Length: 359
Ligand SMILES: Cc1cc2nc3c(=O)[nH]c(=O)nc-3n(C[C@H](O)[C@H](O)[C@H](O)COP(=O)(O)O)c2cc1C
Image: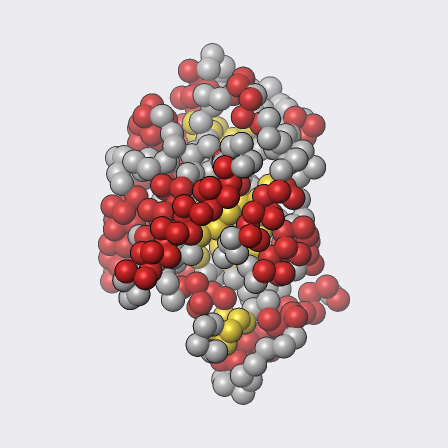
């Protein structure tokens, strides 16, 4: 298939780089995979990111919940932190958030150059109803945000902006078709959102979807869906992913911007309590059944919604009807306490290493 050829060509270059035959990348499809670091050495994007990480984890962006405190705590713990640009409200707050995160991480790196302090990412919702997209992309360019995570539509605008300032774009996909479109748009990495993920989730098994996408994509691949323990991160790598993408695990963190009742419901729920519905945003996603019951609805008998209900504009937060409906993935059953992010990452690291030892 013609559209897959750059990736196949890229695979040949990967082999050449690994064997030391090639030392420089000046082809656009290749430079998507290999980048020059500050010492003039060409490294894959995955290796470059991992060099400043303790665990191969990206803390995923969560509407309302992800704030600068959570992102900073994640990055300082050695995992990539991220937040949706739309969480910074009004739009003028976004540069303020970006300055705070950038300065805090820069100062920490200067104070301890050997510390594993991960880069951060900003999530952009690419959808006609997002009336802030141009503004938010410009803010990311101004601060040279290392990574942008794009969701929903094909991410052309974000890719264009990121290429200009030297950033990278990872795009959310739930199917092979979405993956092919994202590659065509020129993304640097694919976030494969599988069954059981919190927020807008796919329905496919990670075993099925990762294997199918790996047949034509050997660039950065990030896996999500109910990954809540260290051994799950290892399993994601064994399956062919480079990073695990974890949202729900960080809802019950002291830093997340969620009310205590939400965090507590995460710790007391299990997979059977998670409901998959499109009622609340027009796109299928996973929510805590307890919060649906508390809102006076029957989680076992919810009406269907239409795609026209989708809205991601700056007035999204004003739609109060579902404000107490709480998103979470099927991994909630592995979460038993509310902890500071640094302790969550310590636990994940211990579990990851214990699982490695058992194999
Ligand atoms: C409460 C909540 C809100 C979310 N909001 C967003 C969002 O605004 N943008 C986005 O790209 N993904 C969003 N997600 C999806 C996550 O980024 C990620 O795909 C998911 O959390 C991974 O699955 P897990 O929760 O099982 O770890 C959200 C997830 C949750 C749980």
